[in-house]
Image (tube, rainbow, N blue to C red; front, top):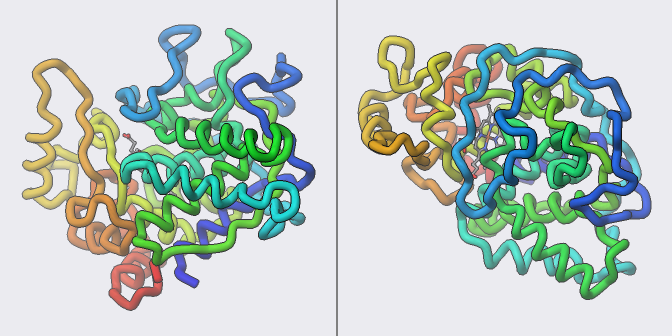
Length: 351
Ligand code: HEM
């Protein structure tokens, strides 16, 4: 099995609770008033009490990440829970996986990239429990959706469409949203890899009922993370440095807002602090220019922007990556060796 498929299957098991699925999202029942586990104080204050939900198809510009990320112990369970099964819905909703695949197949490449990121962001906060989908119901308790790393997530409408079709066919309490998110991430990888990367996705996840904005920054690494911070973050989810490098290869697709790599804390377009290739740097300067202050977007992989392939690792080696967290993979012996290995065209990473 390709490395990327094996490791994606691994994050799909993060903190999952297998049992009869309860599905349904948007309004958790009962509405939580207090966190079930003590949460760290919010690392930033949202500018408005009820920010509008992110627009799925055209992501709104995310506010810049704050440089001083607090590091309380992440609440995501590190050990995968047993009990998920491949073909979980074979009897209860035989077409569930087909439906998700059909809906994902009709999405464009950008949305597919968004679905892969959505899956990652769901699994790294409280495990793969669809808590990233929950809308705010308590005005004093914004959900994960409104956390800085999640403001640019996209693909929610694909999850909604797949869930609606599944509910029509099988009823509303059969297939969990967490499983729909996981199937969609898997299928987006399949289509963007030109059907090279495929794996069986175990299912039977239980949807979470709570979701807290202040659990996003401590659990999702910022684009200026150092290699030690990245390693620590992934280790807290039970993932090795090699698995972290394998998953980072997802930056072979999709887009980034200019603000994600031009913050005053880590300005990748400043030649005195950045090791970015000068040609890419000047091209990005042009693309990020805006008379109106718009936070433009650029592709992550300038060579094959819509293809899941191992170009990301070649880009890391040639200093053609956007984030200092991408470049940081060359700052430790084990991760730089993994980058070099994945950059080889022997099909190990994606075939
Ligand atoms: C290693 C630490 C990681 C950091 C610091 C990081 C950070 C980011 C940032 C800042 C963006 C751009 C957001 C924007 O400005 O719109 C992005 C995009 C993206 N990331 Fe990551 N990421 C990491 C790991 C991952 C992993 C493990 C995956 C999936 C397995 C992933 C998948 C993606 C995808 C597909 C996009 C493009 C999304 C789109 O086009 O909508 N990232 N990431």
